[in-house]
Amino acid sequence: MTITELARQRRHTLFFLRETRGFAPVFLDTEVDMSRLRALRSQDSQARHSTVTYVLYVAGRVLANHPEANAAILDGRRPRTARYPAVHGKVTLDKTIDGHRVVLATVVPDLERRSLAEIQQHVERFRDGDPATMPEFGGVRRLHAARSWTKAARAFRRVVRPLETRPTVWGTVAVTSLGHRPVDSFHSVGGTTITLGLGRTVDRPVARDGRVVVAPVLRLSLAFDHRVIDGAEAADVLAEIKEGLETFPWAVAPAASRPAAATRPANTQPTNTAEPTSTEPAGGRTPVGVATQQAHTQQAQQSGGGDA
Image 1: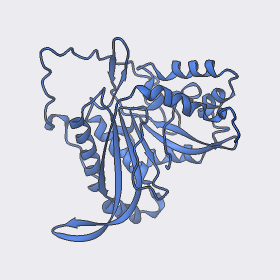
Image 2: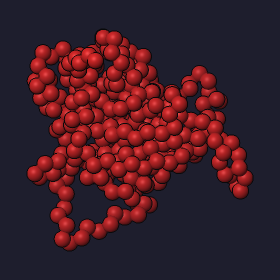
Image 3: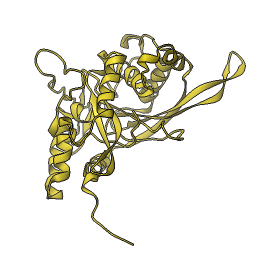
Image 4: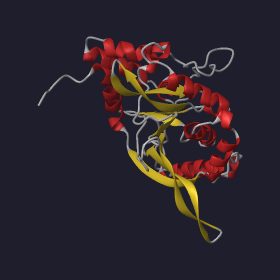
């Protein structure tokens, strides 16, 4: 037996898991008929958008219609929540740094306004890029290079804890995939109120109009932080994402058409909601492929899984 110090290249993973210990995750899952998306992908071989890209696209529009879920919490003696005006989608990546296989992530800003092509371009840039040289991963490299584990952990906490900057660090929704391997389903906590997990798409028997047919089916999981939302809201989000993927392209119903939120009981303390200042630069949103906050925030983008 050989006992060694944990590789520095895994620091960001360890620090991430420490930060998410306080989450109260609850797990849901469903099956998505991917026949429509398979047909769309086969029609345009030159612009084959990945399954992850379609899920990011749909999730961005659904979360924009569910502000209660597009939120984060800062727990403690006086817990605070923040609801964000834009949806930022984190996607995990299977990468190698200094010979160590690790999970890194990138955040697609303003996901609810991005086209499929823009999302795919962003994902491909980080999927194919070298984390050893990309400036956006400079923070990760500095975290690994720090001599002191304690100082590195403190630096990590300073970046990820503020509600005001958390969307650009961890996103407001996370998507992670293991669909490139024979994994049917899994559940992951991505540091966001909603985390979506993608398994593989395989042909399965499904019922259509009273008949059994074979169709491509994706197992889609959703983990939600019960401190922020309840199961009914999370189930609505999952159902709408499923519908969006199965009927793509589709129009998300306006918020006014959804059931009104239940009235808060008189003896319940209201949530102290903090509306953070936008982190977008003056003059418009961040261009596709450019991280909203670069070197010092990328060190914190971390979750489990990673097929883009």
